[in-house]
Image (tube, rainbow, N blue to C red; front, side, top):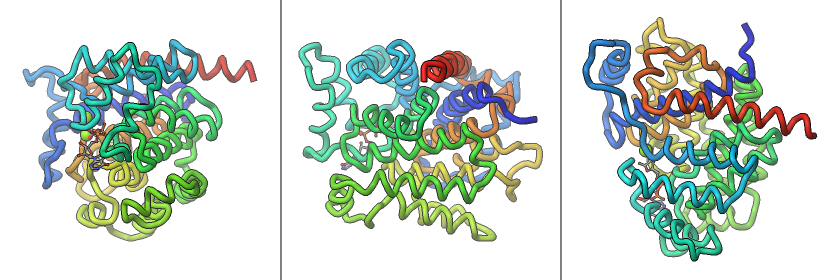
Length: 349
Ligand code: R7I
Ligand code: MG
Ligand code: MG
């Protein structure tokens, strides 16, 4: 049966939270054998296990702030979103935030602050963070705006509240665009999906700041486009090892080393893969595969989860997984409210 848009909305936010919650187990691990991943995931199906629910981290905490701010302001309001991040951090500072971003979140709490983008600009000697913290929370922008142009624009501003380096906010733009295309059903044609992302990013990276940041950081020109071309090449290969994925795309905390990787995880798992249980559907495969890469597993699984959830819809998510993760039901509710907002803005156009 075709997947409804509402089901895609719910799938996107819920699977993002699941990725964060189940990925936390392996964050920072270098070698994650697939056996351990599958064992961890089958533990979710065991109702007798007494270890309670898996807690979400900063990825989900900040994504909830984005969704809530977009809902209450009925669009993007940088002051409100900044305040929301600061408040969330002050209430629950122990969610595993990046070590740099906490300085920004503390400054954003100051009532005297007039330019909410300023604290982010002061990071890392004035160049700003290239971490994946902007990208990990970008999915709700694709559920709030209808055009690719608006999704890009607001995902970029939303990320710039903490990540002022172009590598940081362009990663957020790429993640939001991937969710946007997936919501439209574009993953039915994977080659076309990746080609569309490449052409969008050619425009995004063709500005002075992005070009000079790439140079200063000693990266290839159009760094995201270059990685997406590698994704395309890996897709065309008969078999791809985990080691190859890590060396070609990365699995790190930098947006450049994790957003294209998350996109690859989704594309790679559209088909059954050796080593992954046959009973798994595409969404379960995507999450399991993301964890098996090691590195920044909560964030890569969170981003891959959002893209995959937008493709497969909410019914692809096992109930036992949903019940095992903190904030999953709340994410479903936020997705339903964003769906309503999305349809209101349609009727006004
Ligand atoms: O990007 P950010 O919010 O971190 C997100 C990650 C996710 O994996 C979460 O799950 C959580 O674990 O953290 O936080 P930042 O502090 O802005 O960036 C994360 C890290 O990237 C920093 O602590 C630095 O180690 C590194 N980093 C940089 N290092 C050198 N120069 C980011 N930008 C720079 C830089 O410009
Ligand atoms: Mg985290
Ligand atoms: Mg992480």
